[in-house]
Image (cartoon, rainbow, N blue to C red):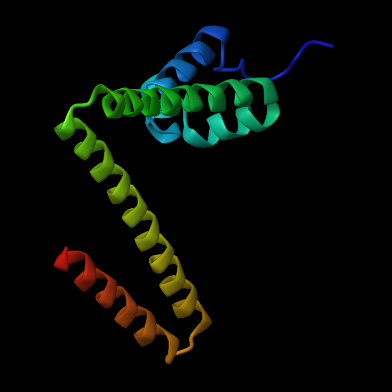
Length: 135
């Protein structure tokens, strides 16, 4: 019996294009917009096609590996300013992760509707911001 319905948008060429954009560092939403597919269609296709999903994850990891290699090269170059910039970026990333964790905790506390926890988290967040500003 012949396949029914609309033909798939995901040709091998489109799959390669998606992987290319992901390797360049674009998000899945940005990539879907560039190649002209809806993000929900892309996610559904990735669930159905495990091999393609694996290629997408490898493309994203390739980008991360290249970024870290560039940072390692800068650190090994002996250039003080470049090394300081790499260290500063890593500190900034770490701080951003901490702030995201605090925001998640604040949202969870709001969802729990416990009025005593929310001010404590906000005070903790303010204290962390003051400490960071002191440095």
